[in-house]
Image 1 (cartoon, one colour):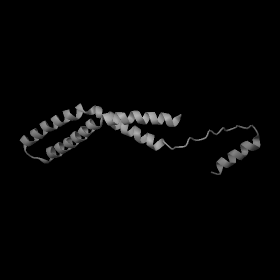
Image 2: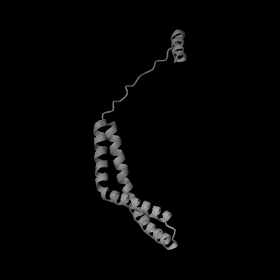
Image 3: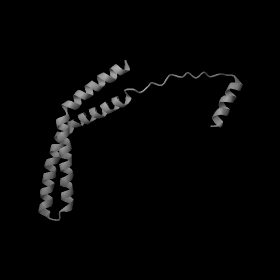
Image 4: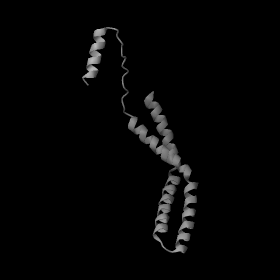
Length: 116
């Protein structure tokens, strides 16, 4: 049952990722252009060039914000990664600890904890 649910979750995440692959590329491109505009803005000394870079940066920032829903595609890629990582993970067996009122058993357990 666990593998089936992981498969269904992976299938849904894959569809979301494939639907948002175009906006994700545009988002990455706009973030890179925003970085280039910022570096040019910091590097230049001319006031006119700074104003121009600020205007270009604002234009690229508006493109970046318009593709912000592409973050769903990034989240879907992360979910696919988690599903891939947990696919063959074994479940831990449930260990039942029986508390005993026997003073010798409690002494042995406490002695073992002290020796750690």
